[in-house]
Length: 107
Image (tube, rainbow, N blue to C red; front, side, top):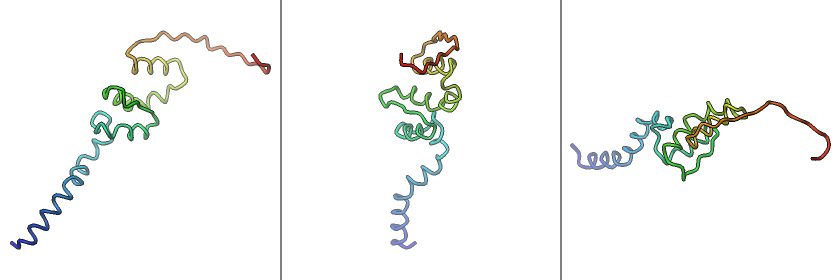
């Protein structure tokens, strides 16, 4: 029961406790529903989305959670409808005839 050893290990505990706590909870950092709020923007970069910090935290988490799914539908009617529903809470009626026109001339 060396006093120096007790003080030394107490100091280590103070330094290492936050690190060990983070490592124990590491899986939660990769779950958009559980990740700390300040970690969400970084997690969003992993799935290729830009989130606005002004958005409500629930919306930020939902966008990050659905990012991979929404990327699959990018550029389609379904993708647009899902983005609008997620961000604005509305169901949009998107009509697209599917036709395109191409011209070599201006206008």
